[in-house]
Length: 79
Image 1: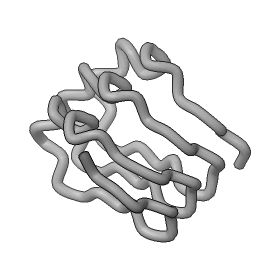
Image 2: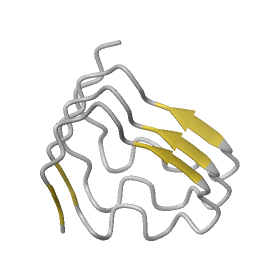
Image 3: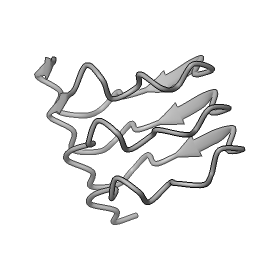
Image 4: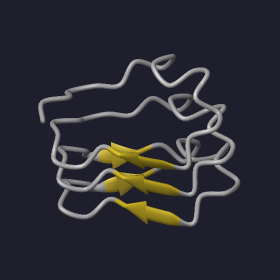
């Protein structure tokens, strides 16, 4: 896959989504409000991307998130 970025409103209106698989892409950065509104999301796979850091607020509005994969990235800081 070749997704390089996710626009902040790209997932708007997908509140019913349970699983989101974005692995094996070229995502370098995720804005803090990207996943807002995905209230039922319980599995998010961001593995095998090019993420270097994650904002503390990236996953704030994902109250049902139980599974998060971020392995095989270049994460050096969370903050």
